[in-house]
Amino acid sequence: MTSFRRQRESSVPRAAQSISIRAMAPFAAPRPHVLIVDDVTETRRLLADFVHRRGYHTLEAAEGAEAMALLRAYHPRVCAIILDLQMQGMDGFAFRHAQLEEPALAAVPVIVVTASGRREILQYTLKVDDVIFKPTITGELDEALVRHCNAAGRAVPQPQL
Image 1 (cartoon, rainbow, N blue to C red):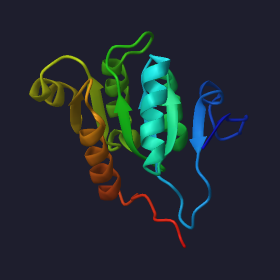
Image 2 (image 1 turned 60 degrees about the vertical axis):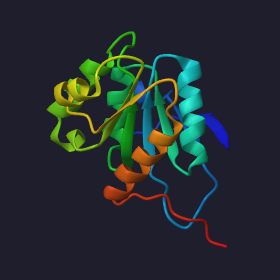
Image 3 (image 1 turned 135 degrees about the vertical axis):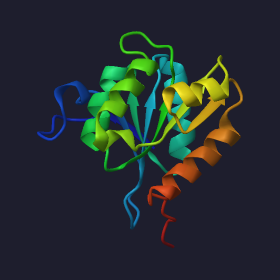
Image 4 (image 1 turned 180 degrees about the vertical axis):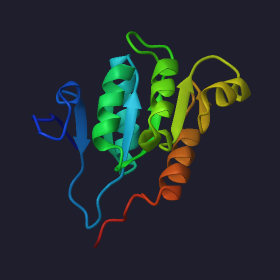
């Protein structure tokens, strides 16, 4: 697994050009992308490692504005968003509101990972697909990613032997 900084591409907005992207060894089919939005670097990297080990490419953003830039650039390939709610800059609530305002981006499933709140209230007010409570998230997150990425037709392809 290799981490690298994305070089300037004409199709990628300036705000998204320095965001960390993790790539996997090539397989026959393209890998679906999961966007991880969390302002705590260690948490974001742990989530990225977890998601990456399950075969997804990961896109990482430290706050909502960066996440919106990445989502606009990569939305056809993004099968799910893992979103923290409490962040500096544009928080998760403002990000979700902005995402829902853009029809092309609104359909990308959002999995909120949080330490507080009530599941039903968060799902209703934010119109998110899943709410997972910290600190124990791995099993629920794995199930949510498989469910949403498979439903979007972007299952992780199996390596060819």
